[in-house]
Length: 296
Image 1: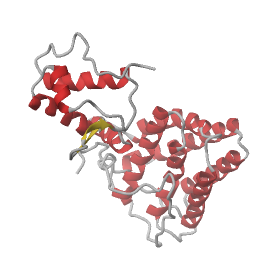
Image 2: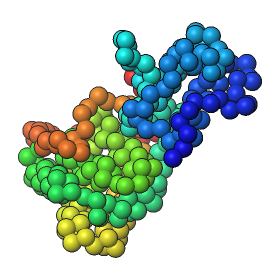
Image 3: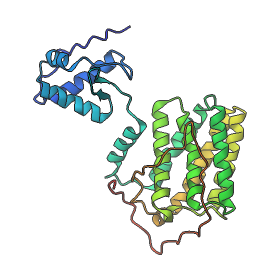
Image 4: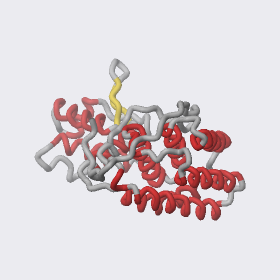
């Protein structure tokens, strides 16, 4: 077992910005000591002595760590700083910040998705729970209603993407789970913010084929056939990418990275997405620019 005593490294605090150095030292200590969420940091007075820094500088460093989501500071007599796990929401926000000024296109997204999703889909064959299987089946039922025109195109599209998010949340590989869920959530955000981007479900080849693939995947998952799962997902994402890419110039990309405060339907408490029939969105008469914009 590693020694959890906080001992700043010899090279610590040699640069000008001491608060930044404190942040790096605490991060180093978290990794070296294999700390877990809930473990406490030394008291503020102890940190001042260990780091040979003033109270203001130590507090500045702790505030940065708290803002990054690495620690949480509890108030009161028994308070103090303790390790906190970085939430998916914070990680997702950081990725969005990076992508704001990148020329992101549908083709870019689906090329990456085509590489990641089959791998992710195969990885969850033995980790999906009965609740996960039931949730996948629920999204399929919603999509069946969408094709019949009994729920809105928006609700139908969210259910399609929720299918993929359920799989991502069950993925045992943290990095693969993060990337797969992030892509699915970006596409869900677009469905919420820009109705013109949604391919109407009724009489839609896109919706019909997605439903077919989702049903085939569910059958393969119930049979725990990893090889078949990978093959179906590969064909599914490639097919979807081809259809979506042909519409790329008609879709508003500017809201792709806009985050929305919506509660996820996974992993435990999922409810069906309800909606009413709506008319198909009007098609744009001219191509739209495929640029992104800052979060509103």
